[in-house]
Image (cartoon, rainbow, N blue to C red; front, side, top):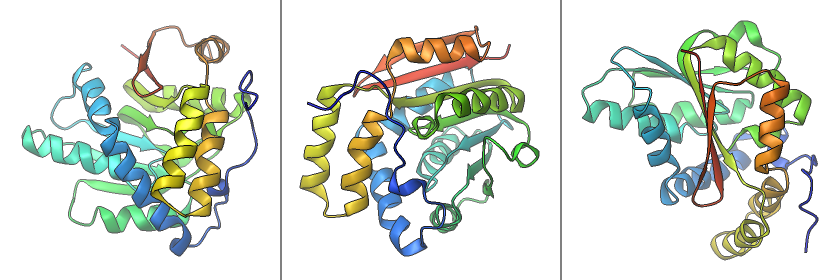
Length: 232
């Protein structure tokens, strides 16, 4: 049994921003499929509806990876005849390259290569900031700074989904990654992501330290937290 009593802070292979396109592309493609299969896109859109989202809103996805969440939102917005401006932010050049290629048919999606903790001058202002399965990549100090940056950039609010650290999820990820892929990065990073993830009390402490008090924190299947922060 792994020690899941506290968060791990070991680096994932994916944290290497110099990874070439050829290595990152298949991983991002797989993550996009997983987000779709396990309801990640649907849950994000449900959360957006609760704000609600109006025509002309600007939505920015921090840690956008391959852009799959933005593409799902773009498809939903088109069905609703609700034009939106969508912007993905990621620090990895290979991720931005992949996302731009995947989004080439969507003229309302653009991308910015930027570090969401340090490149505050590049992040811009948006109605809603979203982030999916990304914030566990940061230690506590970085997480607090990132949330502060989100709070500054968002006019209406913030939606974050990330993993709940639990032994059932840990072993499920090991099983799934070994059944579905032989990719060494996926097999290494998947279980480590769970070890870097959050318990409820940890998120509450981080939010208190970030001086964020207007929020809802909800547990979602499968073993994910949904954090919605309101600005107004």
